[in-house]
Image 1 (cartoon, rainbow, N blue to C red):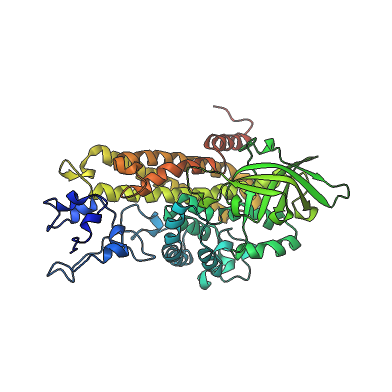
Image 2: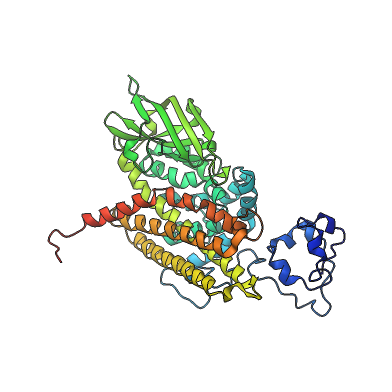
Length: 495
């Protein structure tokens, strides 16, 4: 029961709505939830308006399922969770260790990351340092790079998982739980640059370089990004124009050129840069303090919290010790990073798509049209069926590929999974765009409104195209997958 007498004149929707005969002095539950998300009632200013509950219902006031879930709770909405997390189902892939990590990390995301994500997605600021520090305290930054030597000796998520047992399914859990925040720009701003920019340092950098650079990044004190794309070359990495020339004494590189659409670039301290050199391509770690590095924010369809940048390198002098991998073998260094990068993006994209399926199921259940629930319309059920089928098939394919990753060396993954990972990313982002379109039709005008009932739908519809471009455009990835298949065709095969 709410007393709105002092609030009525301030109601954003006007006084007339509150004085409607179906609202004032009535049970307005149904009409309220046709207009507002439950989170409105949780705001302190509105919570103070509650004066009690209806007599006889003091102990029977139901919590609104799916909107006031306690931190870490699973959703009870069908298909809102992947099958392995749904009650009554089993999985051959996920162990008790994976489940414990999922519970702990979801609680962490709900309590620490989600509130900051909603705030920063709107104000465009980088993730709060307090959030980065909290993640560092549990070694989450290190875990986001997947299994490997970099985890040795670390206490992961308060000891829930041991470094030697951490595998790609643990990493999948992290990626998918992070995607639940429904804030695409913030998600990329939450050190996504590290996820794609630090592996070349870990895999190809000297021990001295790693000791100097990696600890501060894992601690969330310094930031790194992958600077490959240019206005001249996106998916075509062979078309890069940024140059690196050695000084006469051979002790330094002089780097000149530009990079564009670089995630986290505006606030990065380190830049993993692909450069054209005399004998081919070379990857070099550039430090902002070297001087000659300028970054400028690029306005895109999602939040500036991502730190998307245009970068200029003007005679930047870099020690040759910062070379990552062999000189002129940079193409190998860059390409070796793409499989994991695309897999990470696919994990997140599929889980973000599932969030939209959940939103649509809730809305179809509570929205009434022509005196009946929205789901009574066959066309709505048809759209929901397609949405569910898409996300379930994508998740199943993802888990199959992830299992293969746990059984292969990095070299084997490059040889056998490059095509499959390219295909699943293409599939996930194409189906995501179909789901975004269907979701807007289900929500109507609310699906194109940045606030209110359809805010997550609007946000997803506006930002899903990032998934389809980052890490390689859909058509490029599809072509890569086919070319990989053709390479493996037996020479004597015939119809």
